[in-house]
Structures are given as structure tokens and as C-alpha cells.
Image 1 (cartoon, rainbow, N blue to C red):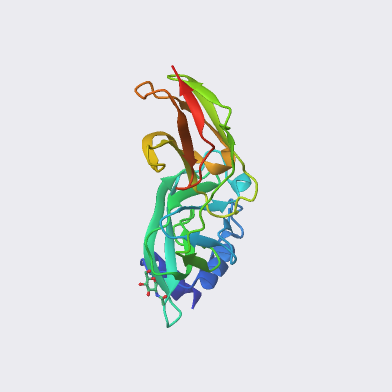
Image 2: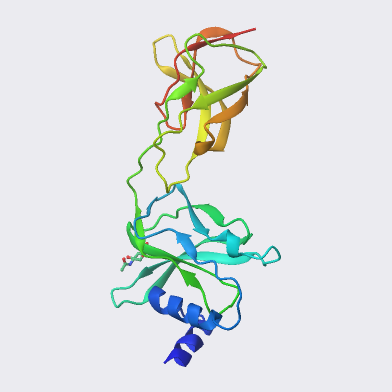
Length: 237
Ligand SMILES: *[C@@H]1O[C@H](CO)[C@@H](O)[C@H](O)[C@H]1NC(C)=O
């Protein structure tokens, strides 16, 4: 039984998550290599389609000379209970980092699990089943700086600060900062993207005020989510 399972894995077929985990542990015994099992996602994880998510493992068990991990893949379970390959989430990333981030592919919402290649070709590591959905809960942090009394000079370096309280654990969304101004009729007019792809738990980002804009007192920022505004502030020469 075990032999035929191992053979089918080597043949490129993959078996149920639970079964594979059992084999992996059995295989490792006696060789004393590292065994960095997947830490997240867990059964309570939730990934949003088209948003960033990550897989983590215990990096403390990874030797400094370990090879890059060739892949981490997404699977779901067929109606007959077998694993069904859905997508490759990331490939060829460092084993020592303990974490790999990627964009969640456009899959049918439902229950999925991930498998990560191990240093033994025949013993992939798998996660628990977790949920992928499309209920995007926007990250709308309070903008702490700039405030209504802020004055920025054209071309100067400034720091934008947002609140990092109540950040949901799993989704690893990246923050952008766009500069807008209030138009003559009160609507928002896009001016420029000041910075993007900042990890949201960083809570701040350095930006350079553009030089090719007209000074005024009706500028504001949108941070992380459309509609998540800073107060209006002033840009001077
Ligand atoms: C598995 O995922 C694929 C891709 O999203 C989907 O088309 C399929 O319906 C899913 N199968 C089950 C049993 O949920």
C-alpha cells in the first residue's frame, strides 16, 4: 500500500493531504533532516481572490545551506476525495525566509489546501483545508499624517503614517498612497501615485512630493483603499 502510494507520488500523481503527511513523517525518521511543516494557512485561514496571501513554515528548522524551495501549489479535493491540482502559487523561493507571498489566483470560491515541495522529491508537505473566497474586506486604516494643518513643499520628502491596529492576520495586502485634490465641483481628482506595494503593517511610507503640480490647499491622500482619505492639506512652493 505504502509502496504503491510512494510510486504514484513519484509518478507525478498526488494523494490526499493527510496520507501524504503520514508518509512524509515516516520517511524522515532515521535521516534526521529538517522538517519545516507548513504553519499557515491553517483550517481557519481565509484568502481573498486577487489579493496577496502567504504560506509560512518554521524557518528555525531550515539549515542555512538548504536549497530554494521549488514550488508551493494549490489543490482542492474532488468529489471522490482525491486531490486536484489547481495552480502553482510560487516557485523557486528561499527556504530560510519561512514565508512566501503571492497573489491568490482567480479560482472558484471554496475549500482548498496547499502543498509545498520538500527536500525529498516524494514527500511534499501539505496544509489543512482552508477557505478561498471573494469577500474582499478592504483595509481602511486611519490616516494619522498628513493632518489638516500639514504643509508640504513641492519636491520635499515626507512621511505618510497610517494606523496599524486591527489588521486581519492572514491577508498580506499592500498599501498604496495616491495624491488627489478636490476639484472645482467638489469631486476627487487623481493627481499622482506617490508610493505603492508597502506592507500595511509597516504603518508608514516615505514619499516625494511631485514638483510638477500647482500649489494649493485642497490636496488629500487616499491610502490603501479608494475612499480612505486623509484630511485636506496644503502643498506650497
Ligand atoms: C476545485 O477548484 C477548481 C478551480 O477553482 C474548480 O473549478 C472546481 O470546481 C473545484 N472542485 C471542487 C470539488 O470544489
